[in-house]
Amino acid sequence: MPAEAGATDRLVLVLGGARSGKSAFAERRVGESGRAPVYIATGQAFDAEMTARIDAHKARRPAPWRTVEAPLDLVATIESEAAPDRALLVDCLTLWVSNLMLAERDVDAEADRLVACLTGRPPGLIVFVSNEVGLSIVPENAMARRFRDHAGRLHQLIAAACDEAIFVAAGLPLTLKG
Image (cartoon, rainbow, N blue to C red; front, side, top):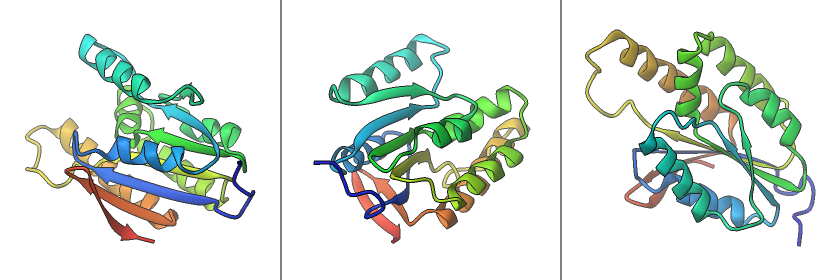
């Protein structure tokens, strides 16, 4: 049965480290929502290892899931896909930041566009997945430090805009907000 429009419109941020279980947690959350699930994929298969990861994610999702690829223009994709009867899963924000950096786009401006979109409260459920990269050592090169800084700023902005923020470690969710 579809969820009642507006009754559970939510913005959710799911953070965690690599292989923490954050994507599986987010997929369960979307799958249990009662809304039509839409997977918004930001990853790009530049090598065999990434192709295998993408294939594993696809295999884990049941048939009703629809996939939309959005490696760069995430805002336009959210605006076109968000609907009261849909649950969007954006996986993941850190890959999106990497894509923007590689395309030499203004990451801060794109992050601000995304926050403005979310402030407008798109309908339905939107769950964002992202890697928390600020818990390790300071990267030794300037590009990696810029990436870490962009991701950290984006996480703060998205967490402020979201109704819920959840940190996943060892497959266990810890509610940070909401």
